[in-house]
Length: 53
Length: 393
Image 1 (cartoon, rainbow over the protein chains, first blue to last red):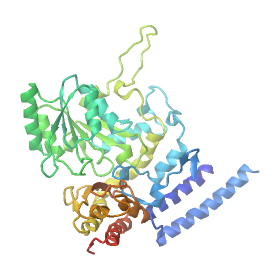
Image 2 (image 1 turned 120 degrees about the horizontal axis):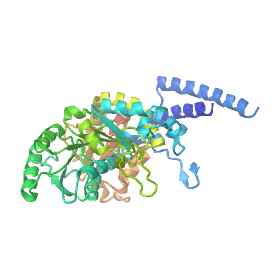
Image 3 (image 1 turned 180 degrees about the vertical axis):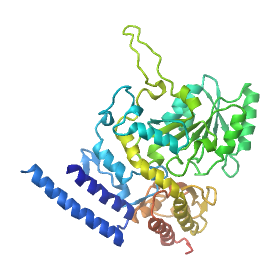
Image 4 (image 1 turned 30 degrees about the vertical axis):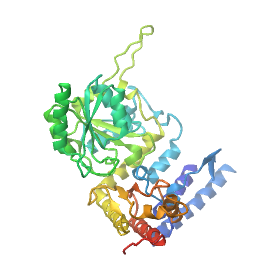
């Protein structure tokens, strides 16, 4: 799960690179970012459960 | 934010459009970034190294397959990964050049080609570029004849850059290789700015070695690169060790002296491998990169008295600009002197121009989106107008 979260963050990093310097996301990029951030929340939540049980 | 004590997290490409001439093609793909995270430990690709113990035989991760794929992709017979194109030059030079041998290169050759020749104690013989900064087959023929007359023999090897680092101009490697082969001179194709950027077909070009740079043009970590060759020359440059210890009588199997055994044993190789599917795809769309370059070049040329010193129309995204008549004129009276230009660019989210440079400078538009290309073109115009220069729309 650690890797999954890191990889999701990496995908977000790629969006930042593609939209630099203004970081104005088009509709498709916003949808992608939203999906990635949702995934990240789930992944962090799973990590909490696994590591702090 | 720091990654470690004294080491700032690098966010150059997240915060700005980076037009550094040597950095554009080496920016990692997302997959390479992920692979780097997972394979950062030292000998990370060696978990499943089995006999015969050599990097290019490892199947998990699929390194052996990667080597075959790269060879096929370049239409060459054998490939090894190397720590940068320069180490590929060195391996070929060390194999084929003996003390005092004349070696052909060009007046636009990269310094590492000179160093490779020097390391092998050869003599550098430069084919001069023409007035348009182009190396031609005719000039190669003239130079070879000149070398023959002076030293009594033809050069033993030719280093030819397909796209040179100074102007980003494209040279007729195929024609030059044809001339060299008439004199039995093997040809090393320096693809530091082409392999991973645009399609390269070694056999079609008629060259004997193809060298690429991972960190310059294959979206890979440094130092990385590839050395590809034909079956004929593989036997020489990739010869296996023959040495034996006089006390232990040890031998070293199929290790290759020119490669110093194994080459890229961790994060560099895995980064190249992770980017490779994307690299194979992106070379098919080089026309889009040239279109983005055209947008930026047009934006620059819209600024009064600005010139492009590279060949036009552009055949590559690495471009040399002359702004002596424009941005440099502003520098003469600006309180920041020449630093105003890079400073203004940074303020607008553009990086990669050498601070202080306002006369002749290079940039590379490779890998940017069309939106970024338009932004960059507009930015040059804005900086011009803000400083009293005319920039046509």
